[in-house]
Image 1 (cartoon, rainbow over the protein chains, first blue to last red):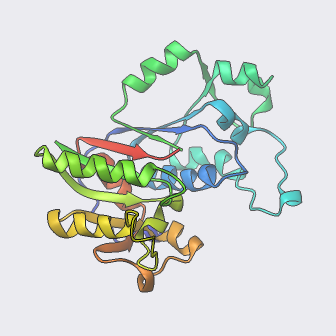
Image 2 (tube, each protein chain N blue to C red; image 1 turned 180 degrees about the horizontal axis):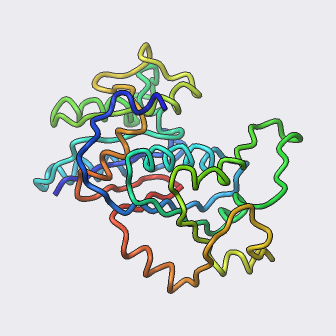
Length: 131
Length: 119
Protein backbone atom coordinates (compact mmCIF):
# COMPACT_ATOMS: atom_id res chain seq x y z
CA UNK A 1 0.00 0.00 0.00
CA UNK A 2 2.12 2.89 -1.28
CA UNK A 3 -0.10 5.47 0.41
CA UNK A 4 1.32 4.28 3.70
CA UNK A 5 4.85 5.34 2.87
CA UNK A 6 4.60 9.05 3.50
CA UNK A 7 2.50 8.95 6.61
CA UNK A 8 3.06 9.80 10.16
CA UNK A 9 1.62 6.81 11.94
CA UNK A 10 1.75 5.65 15.50
CA UNK A 11 -0.32 8.32 17.18
CA UNK A 12 -1.99 5.46 19.03
CA UNK A 13 -5.35 7.22 18.82
CA UNK A 14 -8.22 5.01 17.70
CA UNK A 15 -11.34 6.81 16.56
CA UNK A 16 -14.68 5.50 15.32
CA UNK A 17 -14.90 6.15 11.58
CA UNK A 18 -18.20 5.57 9.78
CA UNK A 19 -18.32 5.46 6.01
CA UNK A 20 -21.74 6.22 4.66
CA UNK A 21 -22.20 4.76 1.18
CA UNK A 22 -25.18 6.34 -0.56
CA UNK A 23 -24.50 5.84 -4.28
CA UNK A 24 -24.95 2.95 -6.72
CA UNK A 25 -21.69 1.10 -7.45
CA UNK A 26 -21.53 2.33 -11.03
CA UNK A 27 -22.63 5.48 -12.77
CA UNK A 28 -20.37 7.60 -10.56
CA UNK A 29 -16.93 6.97 -9.07
CA UNK A 30 -17.95 7.51 -5.44
CA UNK A 31 -18.26 3.85 -4.44
CA UNK A 32 -14.92 2.82 -5.94
CA UNK A 33 -12.92 5.75 -4.61
CA UNK A 34 -14.77 5.61 -1.28
CA UNK A 35 -13.66 2.02 -0.82
CA UNK A 36 -10.05 3.14 -1.20
CA UNK A 37 -10.46 5.49 1.78
CA UNK A 38 -12.05 2.72 3.85
CA UNK A 39 -9.08 0.41 3.26
CA UNK A 40 -6.53 3.09 4.15
CA UNK A 41 -8.46 3.96 7.31
CA UNK A 42 -8.38 0.31 8.36
CA UNK A 43 -4.63 0.26 7.68
CA UNK A 44 -4.35 3.05 10.27
CA UNK A 45 -5.94 0.64 12.79
CA UNK A 46 -9.04 2.77 13.25
CA UNK A 47 -12.47 1.45 14.32
CA UNK A 48 -14.25 1.30 10.96
CA UNK A 49 -17.98 0.87 10.26
CA UNK A 50 -19.57 0.87 6.82
CA UNK A 51 -23.16 1.84 6.24
CA UNK A 52 -25.03 1.25 3.00
CA UNK A 53 -28.10 3.34 2.44
CA UNK A 54 -30.21 4.68 -0.44
CA UNK A 55 -28.79 3.31 -3.74
CA UNK A 56 -25.63 2.45 -1.80
CA UNK A 57 -27.25 -0.90 -0.92
CA UNK A 58 -26.73 -1.90 -4.57
CA UNK A 59 -22.98 -1.91 -3.96
CA UNK A 60 -23.40 -5.21 -2.10
CA UNK A 61 -25.70 -6.88 -4.63
CA UNK A 62 -24.88 -10.44 -5.74
CA UNK A 63 -24.19 -11.08 -9.40
CA UNK A 64 -22.83 -7.72 -10.49
CA UNK A 65 -21.37 -8.00 -13.99
CA UNK A 66 -19.68 -4.92 -15.44
CA UNK A 67 -18.60 -6.40 -18.78
CA UNK A 68 -21.36 -4.58 -20.64
CA UNK A 69 -20.37 -1.15 -19.37
CA UNK A 70 -16.62 -1.82 -19.66
CA UNK A 71 -15.64 -0.60 -16.21
CA UNK A 72 -13.71 -2.28 -13.41
CA UNK A 73 -15.72 -4.68 -11.23
CA UNK A 74 -14.62 -3.99 -7.65
CA UNK A 75 -17.45 -5.94 -6.09
CA UNK A 76 -15.04 -8.66 -4.86
CA UNK A 77 -13.38 -6.09 -2.59
CA UNK A 78 -16.40 -6.11 -0.27
CA UNK A 79 -15.85 -9.81 0.36
CA UNK A 80 -12.20 -9.12 1.25
CA UNK A 81 -13.07 -6.50 3.88
CA UNK A 82 -12.87 -8.93 6.79
CA UNK A 83 -9.21 -9.48 5.82
CA UNK A 84 -8.72 -5.83 6.75
CA UNK A 85 -10.62 -6.35 10.03
CA UNK A 86 -13.60 -4.45 8.66
CA UNK A 87 -16.51 -6.48 9.98
CA UNK A 88 -19.06 -3.85 10.92
CA UNK A 89 -21.28 -3.65 7.86
CA UNK A 90 -24.74 -2.16 8.18
CA UNK A 91 -27.60 -1.68 5.72
CA UNK A 92 -30.59 0.57 6.07
CA UNK A 93 -33.85 -1.38 6.34
CA UNK A 94 -35.98 1.21 4.53
CA UNK A 95 -33.53 1.42 1.61
CA UNK A 96 -33.58 -2.37 1.27
CA UNK A 97 -37.39 -2.50 1.44
CA UNK A 98 -37.82 0.29 -1.11
CA UNK A 99 -35.70 -1.70 -3.59
CA UNK A 100 -37.24 -5.10 -2.86
CA UNK A 101 -33.98 -6.46 -1.44
CA UNK A 102 -33.28 -8.79 1.47
CA UNK A 103 -30.00 -9.81 3.10
CA UNK A 104 -30.01 -12.94 0.89
CA UNK A 105 -29.46 -10.69 -2.14
CA UNK A 106 -26.15 -9.41 -0.75
CA UNK A 107 -22.62 -10.81 -1.17
CA UNK A 108 -21.57 -10.23 2.45
CA UNK A 109 -23.10 -10.65 5.89
CA UNK A 110 -24.61 -7.43 7.13
CA UNK A 111 -26.62 -6.12 10.04
CA UNK A 112 -29.89 -4.48 9.02
CA UNK A 113 -30.82 -1.40 11.03
CA UNK A 114 -33.91 0.77 11.32
CA UNK A 115 -33.57 4.52 10.85
CA UNK A 116 -33.65 5.05 14.62
CA UNK A 117 -30.95 2.42 15.19
CA UNK A 118 -28.87 3.98 12.43
CA UNK A 119 -29.19 7.39 14.05
CA UNK A 120 -27.95 5.99 17.36
CA UNK A 121 -24.98 4.29 15.67
CA UNK A 122 -24.14 7.51 13.85
CA UNK A 123 -24.28 9.53 17.07
CA UNK A 124 -21.59 7.26 18.57
CA UNK A 125 -19.06 8.00 15.81
CA UNK A 126 -16.12 10.39 15.95
CA UNK A 127 -15.89 10.82 12.18
CA UNK A 128 -18.55 10.25 9.52
CA UNK A 129 -17.46 10.37 5.89
CA UNK A 130 -20.17 10.22 3.28
CA UNK A 131 -19.67 9.09 -0.31
CA UNK B 1 -11.23 24.21 17.32
CA UNK B 2 -9.26 22.44 14.58
CA UNK B 3 -11.24 21.69 11.43
CA UNK B 4 -10.18 19.30 8.68
CA UNK B 5 -11.96 19.87 5.38
CA UNK B 6 -12.68 17.36 2.63
CA UNK B 7 -13.66 18.65 -0.83
CA UNK B 8 -15.22 16.00 -3.09
CA UNK B 9 -16.37 17.95 -6.15
CA UNK B 10 -14.66 19.96 -8.86
CA UNK B 11 -14.93 23.74 -9.30
CA UNK B 12 -17.83 25.58 -10.98
CA UNK B 13 -20.02 22.53 -11.79
CA UNK B 14 -20.67 22.17 -8.08
CA UNK B 15 -20.82 24.57 -5.17
CA UNK B 16 -18.89 22.24 -2.85
CA UNK B 17 -15.50 23.90 -3.28
CA UNK B 18 -16.99 27.41 -2.87
CA UNK B 19 -18.83 26.38 0.30
CA UNK B 20 -15.70 24.69 1.65
CA UNK B 21 -13.64 27.80 0.94
CA UNK B 22 -16.16 30.12 2.62
CA UNK B 23 -16.38 27.76 5.60
CA UNK B 24 -12.59 27.60 5.94
CA UNK B 25 -12.12 31.36 5.59
CA UNK B 26 -14.87 32.10 8.10
CA UNK B 27 -13.61 29.54 10.60
CA UNK B 28 -10.15 31.14 10.47
CA UNK B 29 -11.66 34.63 10.85
CA UNK B 30 -13.51 33.41 13.93
CA UNK B 31 -10.25 32.24 15.50
CA UNK B 32 -10.43 28.53 14.66
CA UNK B 33 -7.70 26.56 12.92
CA UNK B 34 -7.93 24.91 9.51
CA UNK B 35 -4.60 23.11 9.27
CA UNK B 36 -5.45 21.12 6.14
CA UNK B 37 -7.89 20.79 3.24
CA UNK B 38 -7.98 17.48 1.35
CA UNK B 39 -9.18 17.26 -2.26
CA UNK B 40 -10.65 13.96 -3.41
CA UNK B 41 -12.74 12.58 -6.31
CA UNK B 42 -13.23 15.42 -8.88
CA UNK B 43 -12.21 17.77 -6.07
CA UNK B 44 -8.65 17.33 -7.32
CA UNK B 45 -9.52 19.65 -10.24
CA UNK B 46 -9.65 22.56 -7.77
CA UNK B 47 -5.85 22.47 -7.73
CA UNK B 48 -5.19 23.25 -11.41
CA UNK B 49 -3.36 26.47 -12.16
CA UNK B 50 -4.42 26.07 -15.80
CA UNK B 51 -7.96 27.26 -15.08
CA UNK B 52 -8.64 30.78 -16.39
CA UNK B 53 -12.21 31.72 -15.47
CA UNK B 54 -13.69 35.02 -16.76
CA UNK B 55 -12.43 38.18 -15.02
CA UNK B 56 -15.83 38.92 -13.47
CA UNK B 57 -16.03 35.51 -11.78
CA UNK B 58 -14.16 34.11 -8.80
CA UNK B 59 -11.03 32.07 -9.44
CA UNK B 60 -11.61 28.99 -7.30
CA UNK B 61 -8.08 27.56 -7.47
CA UNK B 62 -6.39 30.93 -6.96
CA UNK B 63 -8.37 31.78 -3.87
CA UNK B 64 -7.51 28.46 -2.27
CA UNK B 65 -3.85 29.24 -3.02
CA UNK B 66 -4.19 32.66 -1.39
CA UNK B 67 -5.92 31.24 1.69
CA UNK B 68 -3.00 28.85 2.06
CA UNK B 69 -0.45 31.63 1.62
CA UNK B 70 -2.20 33.89 4.15
CA UNK B 71 -2.97 31.31 6.82
CA UNK B 72 -0.65 28.36 6.26
CA UNK B 73 -3.41 25.95 5.23
CA UNK B 74 -1.99 22.68 3.86
CA UNK B 75 -3.75 21.98 0.53
CA UNK B 76 -3.45 18.27 -0.21
CA UNK B 77 -4.55 16.63 -3.46
CA UNK B 78 -5.08 12.85 -3.42
CA UNK B 79 -2.45 11.16 -5.58
CA UNK B 80 -4.64 8.27 -6.76
CA UNK B 81 -7.57 10.53 -7.68
CA UNK B 82 -5.19 13.02 -9.33
CA UNK B 83 -3.46 10.40 -11.45
CA UNK B 84 -6.81 9.17 -12.77
CA UNK B 85 -7.66 12.71 -13.84
CA UNK B 86 -4.37 13.98 -15.24
CA UNK B 87 -3.53 16.29 -12.36
CA UNK B 88 0.25 16.24 -11.89
CA UNK B 89 2.81 18.40 -10.08
CA UNK B 90 3.22 20.27 -13.36
CA UNK B 91 -0.30 21.75 -13.26
CA UNK B 92 -0.63 22.38 -9.51
CA UNK B 93 -1.39 25.90 -8.35
CA UNK B 94 0.69 27.59 -5.63
CA UNK B 95 0.65 25.92 -2.21
CA UNK B 96 -1.07 22.71 -3.37
CA UNK B 97 0.74 19.42 -2.95
CA UNK B 98 -0.01 15.85 -4.01
CA UNK B 99 0.01 13.13 -1.36
CA UNK B 100 -1.73 9.96 -0.22
CA UNK B 101 -5.09 9.21 1.34
CA UNK B 102 -3.35 8.80 4.67
CA UNK B 103 -3.38 12.59 4.88
CA UNK B 104 -7.19 12.47 4.88
CA UNK B 105 -7.36 9.76 7.54
CA UNK B 106 -4.92 11.75 9.68
CA UNK B 107 -7.30 14.72 9.64
CA UNK B 108 -10.02 12.49 11.05
CA UNK B 109 -7.74 11.15 13.75
CA UNK B 110 -6.01 14.36 14.81
CA UNK B 111 -8.49 17.21 14.40
CA UNK B 112 -11.62 18.03 16.37
CA UNK B 113 -13.91 17.89 13.34
CA UNK B 114 -13.77 16.61 9.77
CA UNK B 115 -16.23 18.45 7.52
CA UNK B 116 -17.12 17.05 4.09
CA UNK B 117 -18.23 19.20 1.16
CA UNK B 118 -19.69 17.25 -1.74
CA UNK B 119 -22.88 16.01 -3.29
